[in-house]
Length: 141
Image (cartoon, rainbow, N blue to C red):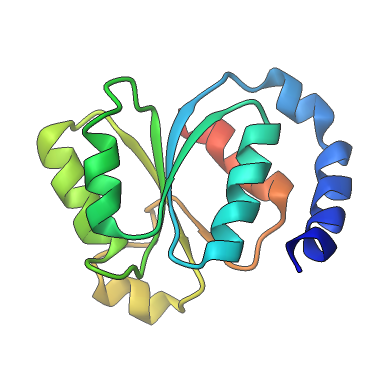
């Protein structure tokens, strides 16, 4: 199934090669509980030249972050098993306040506001195109 859905992503990705060439390589922690979405996002970010470490929940993400002293960016889903993305970021920032964060969410504004995200918090609303993710990552660091 992933092979079928990945082809259009790769086609759209090729259209943004100039933007990708201008981006600096980032070390990214990607936290997404949906396996297919996580694999697609990892592929997109790796094709853009980034080093990506992936986790499926907040607990694993915290353990992974502890092993990444040069972490540039956390891209996290807002709603995760074993803790929300917002709680994950609060814990990470208590340890390292210099980490940039990009939230991804399929939830409406009211839900994200209840979780503590204001309108100014950087986020991408699902579904989004690979080029939008690449552009958002480039703007974060």
